[in-house]
Length: 307
Image (cartoon, rainbow, N blue to C red; front, side):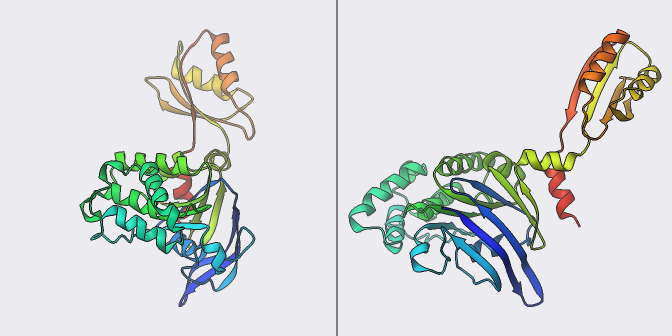
């Protein structure tokens, strides 16, 4: 089920939390909604789920607006602060959620058993929610969001406060779920986005500042290709002078003269890998290292959100 957002705006007093944003999420896509704290991620998700109303703009989910009763059953929502009834046994809580979501009574037991299995809760299923670890509480939150088998899943900071092992487990679970559902995953944890999401949307101060795959965003940010190389067989000055003469090279910097280490920047639209290799062969130099420098998602994020 597709989601179309057009010119969405939400203000709190004089502050625009979301400022005229537009984007689309296709069926079966996991969209990483990335941004610093206060960027407008949670506000946008609350508007999509109809938890709050927008000031301007439109939201269409499968061709319908989220305030239509019929469309709410197609959405599963895990808020940032997982609102669990901790004094309830886990299974009773999931049964309660299924009833709230309108799951047929004859199907509730089957749905609860499936969610326990899918979300990896079997070992803890007879406990009270208060007795669970943070990681298992997040799994219960996912189970309640999925209990009615929605076509769209909205997850707001689903791994906040988890340890690395728990993060990996929740990430794998989301990737598995995302094969058959439309997922919007809000986070400010960069590895989580890169390892989980098909596409990344970066929001800052209520505006969308980037939209694309991690690979696409790197290519857009990187500009000219950069190589780090180490070359043996001649003195640093000789290697430096000849590297600068390569037609595809725009700039050469010495990183470490003792190791004959250099940073080579190619001219726009060109790569220097083969030219550097052929130069080393022609000069009988030993090319001991050649590393393409790849712009990190962290660098892109900082560049787009620190202004």
